[in-house]
Length: 513
Ligand code: FA5
Image 1 (cartoon, rainbow, N blue to C red):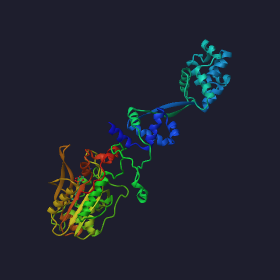
Image 2: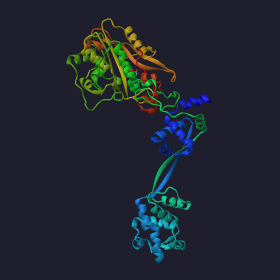
Image 3: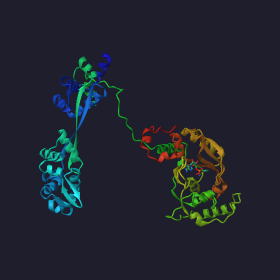
Image 4: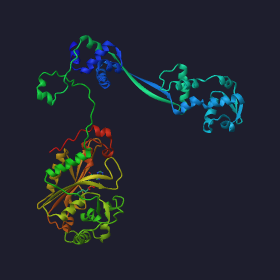
């Protein structure tokens, strides 16, 4: 026990010790008294008291007092009399007044007569009968006598600086006055006092010395050698500290940065596309027929402004048209329909990032290793794994000898670096053969969730672009990765700005390379 006390004493700040000493001399004291006697300022007294109270050495008492005073309207009432009093004074002489003459006869403002009638009735000073106000016997008694709210009003007028304490009677008057609008000002005044607790008494009994102690080792202490002779106040490393939520990146941003770092480290270069793209790059360059379901209005956002986009190089457009219609020299028979330039000109909010890959292939010579991260837009209904606006990371590798095995290896490596174990299953995309989808198992949903699509671009895609080497391509959903990484059951959580969730997420864990 004594060891505990010694430890507690050794960790007391000099202000805490001074405050304790003051309480020894005066067992119940206010911060103001302690400040005056000890020479500390109020802020230091309050912070020392807070610290002592948190250690159960003293108790802090808080007293909140209400101070009442009159508003300007209240002061006017106090001087002129409450409106019902002014009417009663006239009624005392006239016995009755017609409602319509009330304001003229009594001088009470028209706006206030209704309020006054209410109070005349409530106080039983008058009764209204067929539009005529008649004084009651009870009212007559009050002609020469003040009601309690009037006495309170007088009292407050005489004590214009404000009144804290009232007799019971006057308190009833305060309650009555508080029932009217804008008469009373109520100010709250908080005062504190401290008393010593048994632990504090024990500390005082044990005794301590009050002397300056260093709480920090400063540059000056080191320079002038003072550190050797200084006495340091021990730290209580178990003391409760406020929880601080450091500013940090949004989890989606963290994962996007991580993905970019992984691809850059794997030797990919980054490309950026546009949100608004022609149907040509978003669909046609990917050998997606113009009547393909994904191009329907209910799946794709078509834009009014700009309504159309420019088409690229006309040779490319012609070759693309031929490939769609007949397969051209790709070895396929195409889709066997009349390709329309107008449909290809339509402007869309890109539905995937794969158009960036075809454009990149058209504008660059292999060997190519490119990735791109960005938002895509689809007319989707929200559910736990679908958003109408989400992010994809697109990848493209094109060179002699590139194979489907390279595709699987690249994806496996990428997901491994992010900390995911995925499975591949066969899939279909109009622009790739072979094609695959990566999936991961969701324990909570007891189902596999699709993470991305991938495949080897078909000749029908590559040939019109002038590419004769094989190309692997993939497009992976990013929000779904974030869902799993951050253990979020519903994808919408990522866009909810739920401050509690965001605060409690661990800070950026960095790339797992
Ligand atoms: C595509 O977008 C293809 N372009 C991928 C591709 C690229 C295939 C290159 C072949 C070659 P898909 O529509 O399946 O494929 O979308 C890819 C991933 O985006 C999905 O696996 C999923 O992780 C994510 N995704 C798709 N729709 C949504 C949505 N509404 N909300 C959130 N994520 C989505």
